[in-house]
Image 1 (cartoon, one colour):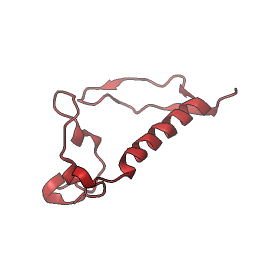
Image 2: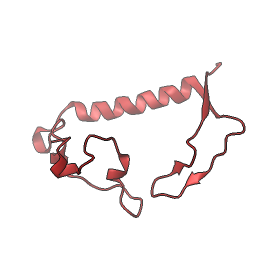
Image 3: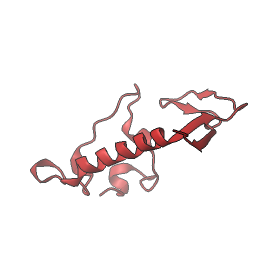
Length: 99
């Protein structure tokens, strides 16, 4: 169901985070029954919450262990859009943090 065109549209195979953002920039609620991998209701996947915690732990570890700086001279210009995106991307330099 996660890739069905009749549920997600013609571009169902593409990763598009904007699918879950409303025109006003708020998160859209999608019924959990659309995500068969995690199921829904009383028989929902026990690993769903764990996977979200692990994702946050990886992000925190990246920020703790690495120094992320915008490349000098790179123009940081926002693109007019519902999502906060950069017009020319966001070029960064990642280096190991010296503790």
